[in-house]
Image 1: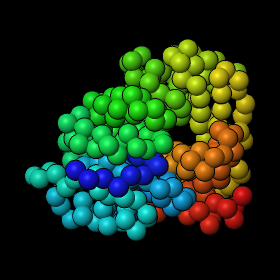
Image 2 (image 1 turned 30 degrees about the horizontal axis):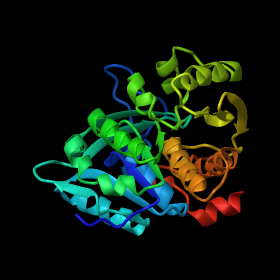
Image 3 (image 1 turned 180 degrees about the horizontal axis):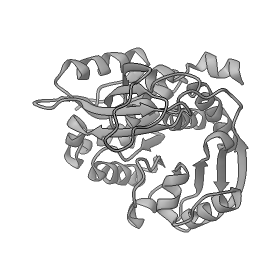
Image 4 (image 1 turned 30 degrees about the vertical axis):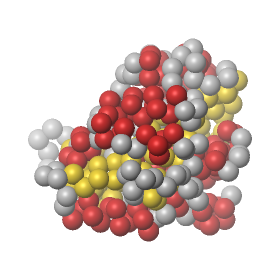
Length: 306
């Protein structure tokens, strides 16, 4: 298989998001009326690919979508957002993954996911794109696809000297063998707590969690702290990179926007601190807009905001 090569390769999920905006999340047995309903493309992997493409990265996305209209439309939209789709398969007999999302008046969200075609992204599929991964400068991963795909891609990248960024979301425990392969880990507070046992209530806790993660050999820990910003810990030295103040209306894809923009900035030669500042700006813009991919800013917007 002949591949064109890209400096950033992202492996992950692609979904169709069904989003309901509500005042408050429903209680068990309660029916509530939504203020707004929309359908948009999402999935952590696809969101991060779009964030990277729109912020200027040379990016290819490894994923599986269904052999339905949604799958075709997702590929077409990714191409419009400057994402290479050579490694995205329309999986026969499968529907594209779906996410059902409630967003409340405080911009918090509540999400249920059906994997659909994402479940077909197994190790055998990943191995078809070994060349693509080996020729990248950065591999960006999350956890919405089968774990075997994540471990397989990380192993290929590690053996080829490719920098690996893992966004450990959705939150789950991970094997030390996987964590030892990671160069940069980007958890939020919940994900950091599940990985370390440290509940993050303040910056001292964030630093403590980062040190636990450094013990696996991970050089850089970036803990996203929502409206506070991010705790960046490099080789054990930690600092807060403050968030930019905006009027948040929807936090969907804020973390994904951060990760895609962060990887883009690193590829442009920015330091981890500069990359975090750039990514904070991208995420700040995203939370002022509704939806996943519709909220992700373009490079000109990020530069203007900064």
